Image 1 (cartoon, rainbow over the protein chains, first blue to last red):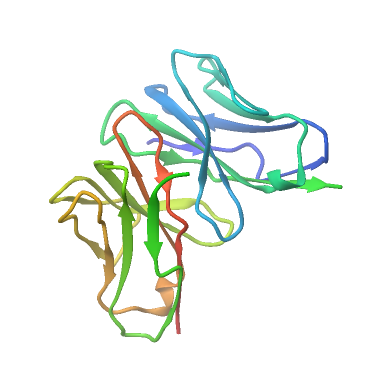
Image 2: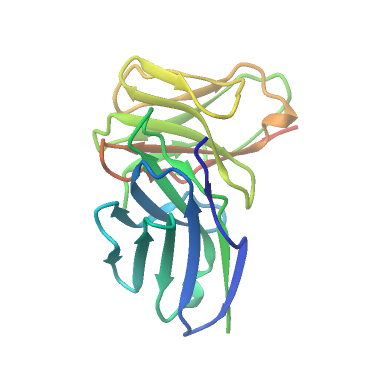
Length: 113
Length: 111
């Protein structure tokens, strides 16, 4: 079946350092991937997306990398700030079936002062 | 900012009561979704809709029901609330080929 899993449930980084959050997916037929940020008590917020015809996409302080060979997705956050503390979810949309988003477990990012 | 709204934001209710969680979006999105999420845990899809008069059950079995009479409105109803229904309920919407946008969520506590 389809599954999207994250390598680490928690990540702790120093303020100002770069953060890398990883995600493994199992459905090679997926063609669209999304990263969400969820702060405590709020709904998930869209951060950045990438389609399967791309390897890299950059936003403001964030970069998403897609490695289709090993079915791996990562989110890089540059110069991590206290406001980046949250749970980060990756999600994929398979091209087949009902095209429902498949969410990973989530990684909790904690910023140390 | 996504224009998707959920009410109420918080609800404390007794066992056996009927409740309806409201979700509305003003983006004209055809697809809408309901997720259940316990604190710090993953999201579980409980219902989705691909358009007016279309509703489907999600991956997680749920005793709730939904309706989609208007494009912008996707309410979720629990006929008889139980303590096991205590959770956060998240509504989302999307247009084909784009990301889902989430509402702020409803935190439900059933006593």
